Amino acid sequence: MDAILRFLTDYEILFYVLLGAVILIYVRKVYLAWRDWSVALFGLEKEVAQRKINAGLSLVLFSTLLAIGLFVINTFVTPSVPGVFQMATPTVDLTAQPTMSIETPTVEITTQGLIPTLSAFLNKGCVPGQVNWSYPLDGDSVSGPVELSGTVNIPNLGFYQIQYSPIDQDNWIPILAGREIINNDSFGSSWNSADLTPGDYKIRIVVKTNDDEQLPECEIKILVKAIERE
Image (cartoon, rainbow, N blue to C red):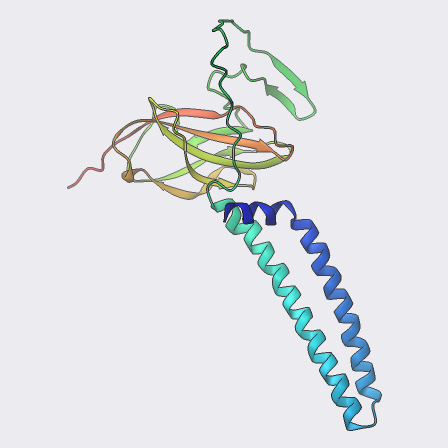
């Protein structure tokens, strides 16, 4: 299922071009058949022309429905299915010797403004106005359904994904995904933290550009509390 959705997304424009060409060709055929029907003098000629009109209109309608279905799938279905946009997992070199280095945060000036480098921001890739959390914030306690909100507003945005993991693990589980720019607003889906064992968790925003470049994860720590029963 994930492979089919990725295929439809990758070749979306090509499908639109092909379906558009089919629609144009058969619209012309319908017009020519209608013209033949309007000038036909005999019943048999009108019947043949009518069959051509019906067949052409059927193909035009079918192609139009396919284009609408493709648009709905790529716009609404694909972003909501976790795992469709797969993240590349780094390979660990077991033979490498551990090293320690201290880096000084730097900032580069681009046409989009000030964008901190990988080590520039203290909160693991969270950049106000670009990739950041509005709720919850680092250290917050949550329980029950949580309306996740924040900002994903970068040039050349490919997609983003929200993930969580227990604090002592790196077992990241997807919550939701999207492709639209979000500016200090809801990510569009509620996360039910009541399904989790109460305790400390990590939650992060993972962003990739259209060039398949992954930005530093915007990661925070939260406390999931049990729902108090009255």
